[in-house]
Each structure stands twice: as C-alpha cells, then as structure tokens.
Length: 281
Image 1 (cartoon, rainbow, N blue to C red):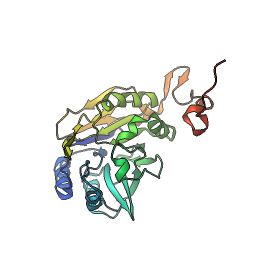
Image 2 (image 1 turned 90 degrees about the vertical axis):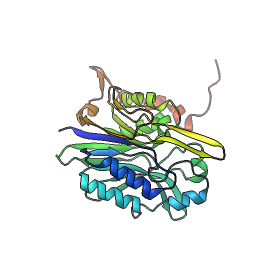
Image 3 (image 1 turned 45 degrees about the vertical axis):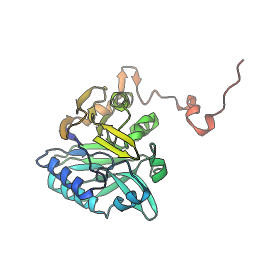
C-alpha cells in the first residue's frame, strides 16, 4: 500500500499562536493522508523582533500547547504530523521539528544549520539527524528522516539521513532563498529518497528589513521528479501517494548503487582532518 503524504502551506501570523493553530486546523479539516508536513516555526512566524518575542512563543516539547494541538490532529486524522516549532528547554532555545503520531508519541529534531539571525536567537541542534520507523494505518512501513529549512543547503544533511535508511525526508521550511525548490529534486535524486518540503508564504518585516517567503512547497520522487509543487502565495494542502520501495532501490544501473558506490576514504576534505591543502608538484 502507498503512503499518502502531504504538505501544508500557509502564511503564519507573527506571534499569533492561537490564530495560527486555528488556521492550520481549518486547512487540515477532511484531509486524508498518512503523513502531513507543516512549515518551520508554524505557530509563531519567523522574523523575531527580539529575544523577548521568541521567549513569548517558545514552548517545551512535548508539553506545550502546540504539541497538544498536533496530538489532537494526529489522532483525529490518523496521520503522522511533522511540524516546526520554537522550542524552549530550560534556558536553551532551539528551532525544532516534532514528529507526532496518532498514538500520541512525539520525537524531536533540532535544526543543525541555523540561517541568518537564527544564529543569534537559537542554539544549533544537538540531537543529530534522526530517522524514525513509521507505519500507516493500513500497515505500510516507511523510514522517515527530518531536516529543517536551511539544512537543505548542506548536502551532508540529506546524505546522512539516506545513509541512516530514510525513505522519506520531511523538510519543514520558511524559505526565502530562491534556490531551494530547484535544489530539492537534486537532493532527492542524489540520495534516492522522497522529499516533502512544506514552506510558508507571506512577508515579515523588522526595522525596515523585509523577508518574503517564497511558498513553492513540493514533493519530489527518488528520480528527482517533482510530483507536486504549490504556487508562491497559496494556502494549500496537497496529497500525493508514495511507494517507499522506490526509495529502497538505490541502483543507478546494473552496476552502480548511489550509496554503495561511495568512497568515503577519498572524501577527507569533508571532515575536520581534511582541511590542509597539498602543495603542487
């Protein structure tokens, strides 16, 4: 049986947690899917005016009101939800994503690669890139990896998830750079995985600076084919069917496998030990 996978795209209102939860609840009404991916920081908006604003909306995981809402939706829809939240853990703040199942179980990923002023507000994730074994109500098993927004810019993120067995990569996002929609098909193809990017749209401003979020949420196949893509300014939920077995066949041809053909010993420049330049002969 296929996995019915969806992204939800909308424009969160800045710091209006209850309003954003209500908007998502309305969009989710009557959606039939096994896996639904929501944007990064979907309850709060993105362009924080101050650390005080972040502290107003950041929540503990799994005991905050937003996770409680996600648990309710997961239960009523019979779907696994992946959603981005501002997380508070004591005095520490993370740009996180939660994986919430119909039975109430919650796992967390904390964004590793922080973008722009996130580097001032949040700490880099300390949980690593995680892959979870998931099951649809019909009994289909699939392995779910999670990365958040700017993680896409670093090929090692998606590659690590693929090496850990991901069939599907959920990618909650607040994209402003124009390149990601054309790069995610490459991430899907070079790792032979499905990718689900759930972006937001709209605009936020701070002290005369404006960020425009580009929408264009999309689902990509292991071949790199774009299965569906939203426009730049729509509130929309799109559902597509994925066959996890397609991601487990990583053959390029009869003689090449995209992961087994790797030669890590020759990639020293991607590690801390490989930073020295060789002198010319």
